[in-house]
Length: 105
Image (cartoon, rainbow, N blue to C red; front, top):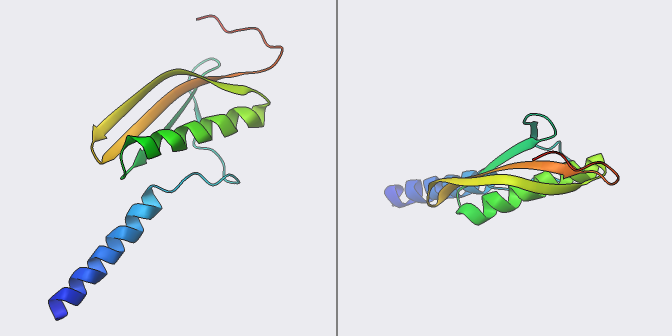
């Protein structure tokens, strides 16, 4: 019985850690967005539940960053890396501001 209890405690701890590592960005928290050159930004998220969760979190953070600047997020480049189920989604994007000239490609 002691073995079973130890195993169940370990599994519960792993489940809590997994959820904590893949939670969605808090809408009131600062974004994880970083400046990535002239007029470009970078954000990356990792998920223990496959690429969809990481991609969703990165896009939400990018959209929120651009909304805070008064613009719309425009993806430039993205990449998914890792070994399933632990995946990382990286996104490079620009923020298109109303009335601003389009950046040179």
